[in-house]
Length: 269
Image (cartoon, rainbow, N blue to C red; front, side):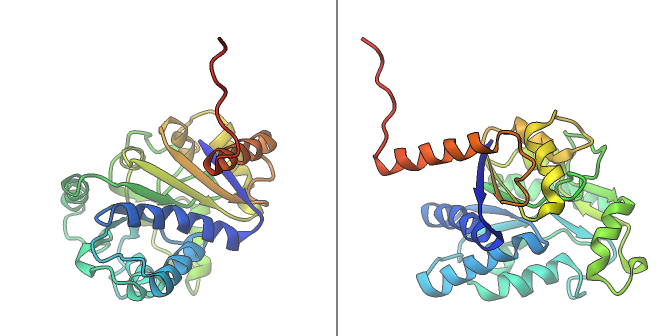
């Protein structure tokens, strides 16, 4: 796992957006896996700026979101479809027909989840999956104890998640207790994962995700099994990492190599 530590939330958003933009420019028909929540707002804001000021073209991009609350329609102010429209889709030139968010009001949830998985496969799989992380170490709505091989499905939210998300609603009673979420196994099939975390409240979960054992109790720890994960953290989120200085050294060495200032050692003759 590549670990990049930036000084603050703004720099995290800019750095994450660079990874997305690089892919979109290189592969205009790429498939993006998208997340919601406060952590990714900086990334979306920077991508919007790139679209407006640098001509970053999303016209052929396809996207799949990680999750959606059960019971909320697409126009509900707290639905994730509404979040994506307000904070990203409405400000770029993506074709809304190419944007996919689970339907929280599906009549047959099992069939809907199977179809969501099928649609991802039909698009060739997700090229880059953006991820946030919960305070208890969950990714998407894969709460502690979720199978590390799980697929898109209905999931009951923990009381901790309900409390964390209550700040977006008028009161805790309004927070849905069920959600549709991509599974851990679905996420691990993405070609690259981009994990973004900011703030002291995420420091413990980040330490357990990156340096702890792989366990279903910290579903984000399954990312250790993925071949290409980039974690972009601010100083507060990274503060508990024991190998923090080593990650800095690795990133510095990679920067030098990309600039041609440092070359791999030649074999000893």
